[in-house]
Image 1: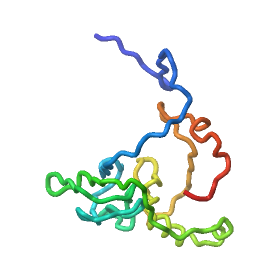
Image 2 (image 1 turned 90 degrees about the horizontal axis):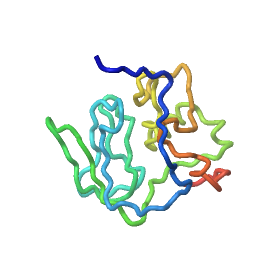
Image 3 (image 1 turned 30 degrees about the vertical axis):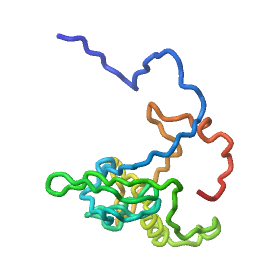
Image 4 (image 1 turned 135 degrees about the vertical axis):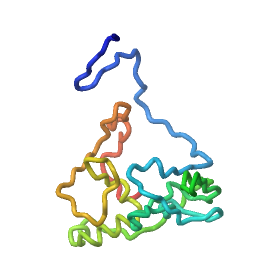
Length: 182
C-alpha cells in the first residue's frame, strides 16, 4: 500500500522567493473571448449578438435561458468577429476584436442619498440591466443567484481568499477614497 498524507486546514508549501510587491501596466489584448462555461450555474446561454455587431463595454452578449433577465455583458468595446458553437449548436465562445479606446454603455447613476430612497425592485432591475447580477453568487452551490427568489441572508466578501489572490494593500495603494467614477 502507498503512503497516505491526510491534510487538515490546508497545506503550506515552503517555496523560496516571493513575488515582487509591484503593479505593472500591460497592453490591452487585441481580442477577447467570453466563454459561457466560465460562469458556473449557467443553464443554456442564448446569444443576443451576431457576427459583425459592434458592442460597448457593458453591452449584453448573452443571457441564460432559465433566467432571461440575467444578462452577461461585454468586458470591452469592439466588433463581434466570431460566435463559436459546438455540438447541438451549444454556445462555446464569443470573440470580440477590441477597440484601441474602450467605450462604455451608460447607465442611470444614483447619488448616495438617492440609494436610501430606492425600492428593492428598482435596485434589482438596475443590477440586472447593467450585467452585474452574475457576480451575485448563491450558496451553497456557488451558482448565479436566482433574481426571483428572496435570500435569507446576504454575505458580502470584500477580499479574495484564494491561494494566489493579490495583496490588496499593494493593488489599491493610493486609492483610499472612492472616486465615484469608473
